[in-house]
Image: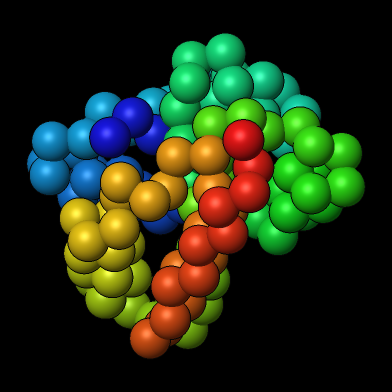
Length: 118
């Protein structure tokens, strides 16, 4: 899977997904502090799923219809870095084929995938 990890994503998650064989571009390594709109532009241009912890992307996606390839919103506050990493890795392994052109929310014990972004 090809992903763009926003700055709100823990480096441990990025490292784990890369070790799982996914291509992951990381905003922190590329262009720290770019705007949300610029992040979406990169994701769309490169046809990458955007992985973020920032709920503001929901407004950009649903109200402004700004994304075309998909968003994965990570809502795992309060969990250890290792548990977050395991949950994200396992969720992508199990549901990755459903995530393109969808808005996915990963929270503790729950994965919601809304398929109507295309």
